[in-house]
Length: 500
Ligand SMILES: Nc1ncnc2c1ncn2[C@@H]1O[C@H](COP(=O)(O)OP(=O)(O)OP(=O)(O)O)[C@@H](O)[C@H]1O
Ligand SMILES: [Mg+2]
Image (cartoon, rainbow, N blue to C red; front, top):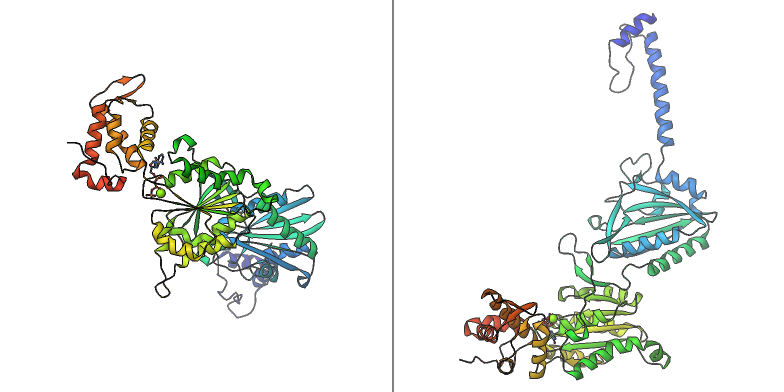
C-alpha cells in the first residue's frame, strides 16, 4: 500500500551500509522499496554523469587541443627558481600579443606531485584521483622585482589554454617547489602544430630576456639561510658615491676608472678595433682603505649596468651569477673578499676549487662580453699563486694604500662635512695619524663631533662647531692603549702616535 510504504520510509529505516535495499518483514520487496530503488538508481546515474561532466585538467586539455595525444609534442624549459619572475614576465609579454587570447586555469593539488603536461594529458588528476592536480583557483606569489620592496605577482602553478591566432596551444607554468624537490621553474608547451609550439617556446624565452627584471639592477646572490638552501636573490638601491667621495692616489683612481668606466664608454670603438671588453680588476690593500667604498663608487657611476654581487659565502653560486651577467650585459660581477675562497682549499689536492671555478668562469665568458669582474681582497699574498697559475683573467691589479699625508688631509675635509672645524691643529693631527686608514679618519671626526655635542658646543655658521681640542681629545682617545682593539678594527695600528 502506498500510504503504508510512505509511512515506512518516513520511519527513517536506514539503507544498509552496503547499499542493499532492505526487504519487507516477510523478505519480499514492498512497493516502497521499488520506489526507493528507482530513486537510488536515478541518483547513481546522476552521480556518474556529474563525475564525467566534472572538468579535469585532462578534459580541458583535450577539449582545447582537439588532437590525439600521440600527435602532441611537449616542449619543456626549466630555469633556476629565482628566474620565476622573469619567466612570468616573458609569458605575460607573449600572451599580450594582439592575435593571442587565453584562459588561465588555476591548478590546485599540485604540491608534492611531480607532473607535467604529458601526465595531465594522460589523465592524472582525473575523476579517479580526487586529490591530484585539478582545476581550481589561481594561486599566486609576489616575487621581488625591483629595489625598495617592488614585487610582481606570479602564478605558482597554472595552465594557460591559448588561442595562438587560430592554433590551440597549452602552456603549463610551474614555480619551484623545493619541498617537493622541484628546484626549477618550468614552462611546458604543447599543441597539435609542432612549429607553433617551437616558436612559442623560443619567443617566451626571448621575451623573458627582454623583460628581465634584473636588467640594469644591483643584485646580490646569497644562499637562503632558512628554507631549503635555495638561492636568494636580492635587489638593492644603487648607491650614490661620487668621484669626490673617494680619496685615492691619482694613479690608482685613474687605473680603476680606465679599466671599468672608460672601457664601457668606448665599447663600440674598442669592439670594432678587435679589442676585448671582458675585463677583470683586482683591488687589494689593508682593511679600511676603501676597497668596498670604491666598488660602491663604480656601481654608482655605471648606471644602467647590471651588477651582481657575491659575498664570500655565496661563491659557489659563481656560475649562476656569470650566466645572469652574460644574459644581461653590460654587467659587473663583484666578488668581495675573494681571499675567503682562496683559503677554502681542497684538502687532498691543495687546490682552491672555488677560486679556480671563479677564474674558469671568467675565462669562459666570450671576449666581447661587456662584463667586468671586480674582485677585492686584503690578502693579495694568498691570491697571488692562484692568479699566477691562471694568468689573463685579471687584467689589472690596483693597490689601495694607506692614505698619505695629502690624502689624510683630503679625508679630513671630506668627512668634516657640515662640521665647523677649527683647523688650527690640523697639520699636527695629520702628522700624528700617519699609518691610519681612511675609515680611521672618518671615525676620528665622528668622535670629535660627539665631544663637541657633549660639551654643548654651539652651531657656528649653521654647523656643529668642533674645536681643535675636540679633535685632539678624539685622537688621544682613539690612540689610547686601552683602545687598542678599536684601533685594530679601524686600521689605525700603524705608526700613529700619541702626543703626551
Ligand atoms: N679611500 C677612501 N676615500 C673615502 N672614504 C673612504 C676611503 N676608504 C675608506 N673610506 C671610508 O671608510 C669606510 C670603510 O672602508 P671600506 O669598507 O671601503 O674598506 P675596505 O677596504 O673594503 O676594508 P675591508 O678590507 O675590511 O673590506 C667606507 O665606507 C668609507 O666611508
Ligand atoms: Mg671591504
